[in-house]
Image (cartoon, rainbow, N blue to C red):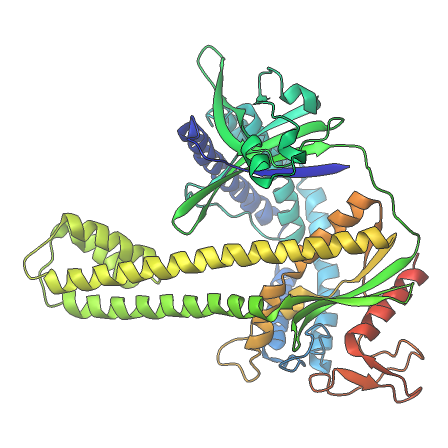
Length: 552
């Protein structure tokens, strides 16, 4: 079993942080070079494989389908659980059928082109590998970081080729990570001894079992040294990090990798460590009974319902984000609107103020960038340049810009910290829910809803806007819930399975009758055949459980 242990950095200065930051920058630079090479070679390959008129027609059909999907109404109400996508009209179905036929033809032609141009394709791939080898030699990265980027590139390249998309470059913002790997593994005990890549100063056992919380926190403070580079004589360059070892590493575990992560939250930097450990499973499912979980989002009196579960033991329950958290998530959008509004106002003011004045040459580029960009960062850059290039008659404009910057920093910091707190709080809620469920049931079946199709953004203006749903979809972050559930089940020896359960909400769990009604207005429905009344989400969870047991 693979587990990742996360530790925060404690008080104290991180030694050789600048070396780690330089390695992070070079990781980004190396990635961007790989992306540039890959996109160049793939464009040449695409010229050889292009299926001509047939592929052009396929692209036109896909554009037509996308237009239809964006313009068709999404049948959900303001409080409906947005998961039953009912946008399939006859026209959309016809376009999809045409796409399937055309796609079959395109694939046949491309296979023929592969056979016809196989020597040229091999030559291009050999060219790609040679260019990557040359770039890799001059990357200036410690081998562990270089190999990790190379692995990430190869896997991302395969995904992009399957999807027909291109790899994207990354921007350098002074955040990132550095890593080390242990190909053969390192026994946890070896990390507390002297070795060439990882060293942790031991702590007393009272750091984890002392009855005093303050004593535990004090004793858990220690130092971790991570090799991030090498000197000319090949001696290690250590990143010396103060950490809080708030929980012990398993004595019988094997360390596979260690990552030091640097991220920004508002105006502050946060550093943390991730230690990936392979360890024997200490859990077994407490029972062989199963549970079905229906996921989605529905606003109720208690908050935002994210999931409803039903077990074979006739117990049930729900996972709800408290209304206080929902309102705080909405505040993030409110702050974002305030930031955008203030930015629009300051750009308009600066345009009127500066067009009537002769500005220094040193401010011309920054001014054009600030007035033409939608990013507040460009206006902040103008302020920095303006401070160095003051001119006659600029007092009112400069003061106005300083006031905007002060307000912007306040709102942006508030928003960033609030988002970070809410995301962590939501993850902890999900973690507790998943831990409880995976401890009680040996089999967990989850309804796999099609979030990507629901995420299609309609063009503006839209005849059927659904801002509440779209916002709630981001708040619940179902992908996070899926990952947490799968991890918890794997940790405790329970099986985890995603199911495509069409019509889970509308099909009666007792008799199978498929009813149609306004689900946005009626949370509880009475079956038209058997007369049984049920909560929509309870009914859906029962159907998920039934389908999971049938497919075992």
